[in-house]
Length: 376
Image (cartoon, rainbow, N blue to C red; front, side, top):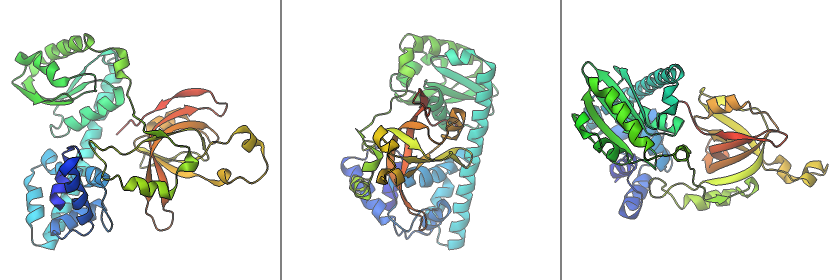
């Protein structure tokens, strides 16, 4: 059941019906894994000792398992779960951890190369379907890279690795664009292809890359408008920060496990106050200290007010670059979209916010722009 839960979450199947039962029971059992390989994997991923969440499986466990097939050979995972020697289990788990780090580094390298191409080729910014290629890009990473390009530019993206006369690619899309239909409209270009509306894989002669780029951009222009590139974030409810309580968090926990088909609730809060300068975490994440908004009477009053002392740490994953560009200052007013999480650190733990998006305002209340997660 533990392995079924990991596979169900990692493969992003809907967490409804029997899948939800498998995931919930398996996650509860993962509190105390017996398999030597699984225990070693949890150790390197710094997971365990409590009820494991679907998010930890998706973002800590699954990437390390997938790294074997992406960067090397998947049989390392088979051995990890069948090995009987604890030392060998730790050795394999450490290797998977290292392969995942190499995958992240290769992903950054390709993204840096793509960023340089966008800076050098203004025409890429006008493409309705981004088709970008490079020599020797790692084929196990280009799918993840395509996802990052879609997140950053809001357009369908195909990332292609050239290897001599052959080219191999992976694509990701936006809700308004059926990517497999797009490939089927020029099927003769490919030596093979497959996928679905949101993700595809394919190979083709490198000599036909220009033909593919032209066709897909024309195809996309006929079916998309600029408005289709605006990302949409679905919100469940408006929730002032003073209503974020441990009791609410516990109620939300009863809705778990979250994932495909049962997304984590996302809330909005307007005109929250930034209480301190942003703090960078590992150069790509950011932590903000936020407090509820005060109306004019409360702001001008000299009397003690509980809302003046209430504040939350808010984590913005992959938001460091956009927050730095926005030059946020203490006193700025923000509209935020967030989910509610809990930091289990024994000294400074407690409720915290996980930022999904920020709409910035200056201290004078002038609106600027949204800051979505970008970067690596």
